[in-house]
Amino acid sequence: MKTIFSGIQPSGDLNIGNYLGAIINWNKLQEEFNCIYCVVDMHAITVKQVPMDLRNRTYKTLATYIACGLDPDKNVLFVQSHVPAHAELAWILGCSTMFGELSRMTQFKDKSAKNEQNINAGLFTYPVLMAADILLYQADLVPVGQDQKQHIELTRDVAERFNAVYGETFIVPEGYIPKIGTKIMSLVEPEKKMSKSDENPNSYIALLDSRDVIIKRFKRAVTDSDTSVRFADGKDGINNLMTIYSCFTGKSFDDIEKGFDGRGYGDFKSAVGEVVADGLAPVQKKIGELMGDKAYLEGIMKKGAESASRIASKTLAKIQKRVGFVV
Ligand code: TYM
Image (cartoon, rainbow, N blue to C red; front, side, top):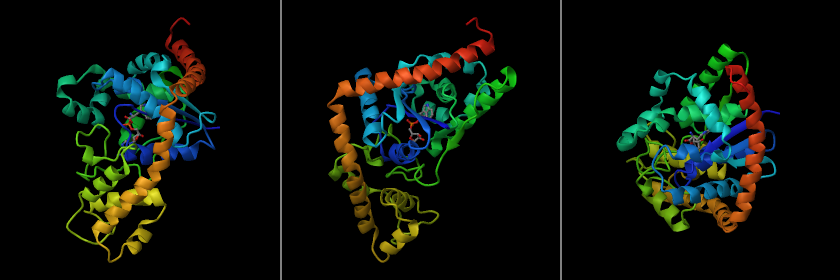
């Protein structure tokens, strides 16, 4: 059975970009594959975090995985810092990763432009830790949004380079990036991706936003001066809203265009707000319940870390031997 690995940073409140671009697709994979999903808290500290908030969001991210339908009995769900092999493999892989290739990572360039006071070494070597996350579990497929494509390519390059020097060791993973929903854009600047670390809360819909907030934010979403609801070049705002509407209702762009023919943007924006609020309501309820039972979440974390460690320590021992450590 093929292995799937993916993760989300608990660096902010998860938004509908993370939901549609990642978690929804993870849900579809859990029946057919051996799936491992991680809350990548070590990645989150590459930008400044308030420790108490990070801890709380780590619980909340795990609760969100479960609330969105990931069954803890069918998937390995765990927290990255609970499995030290991630950091150990990252060191070894860092010695097979070039300074030049890390310098070309667009996420590093974007984040260092945003955090000029804190361009730390972790931010730079972040993709090496991500490669370690994936390669440690010999993952075949990595379901992510489009913004992670470059990191997956780097992971493949590092795995191939390691295999060429030390002999076939790693499975070279593939990204799994469906066409629709894997690049949800900001509601305020629709040419930019929706991000959980955006300073402007009007730019995103967090999974726990209230119905009123959701409807208000969609009403205010930036569109264009045209009035007809149709998917076309140059209509980034409307294209984004149509994508979101399509993901939540399963309707095609054709059906949406027909359904809103002759009606203005105002009607459409209200409809998008309604379907998103309706779609998120059961997830919100479940997250609330799970967050009220920390002991249950800790039990899942513990069980997940044990399962993950079993797989990870086997791969790590093999790699340590290959590079010449005394094991
Ligand atoms: P992160 O935490 O930024 O995002 C988590 C997942 O959500 C996707 N995503 C989006 N999809 C659609 N539209 C958007 N606007 C949007 N914003 C985010 C991301 O592509 C991602 O799939 N480096 C990763 C975390 C990571 C990881 C890994 C992922 C660490 N190790 C190993 C896979 C495998 C990140 O920062 O994701």
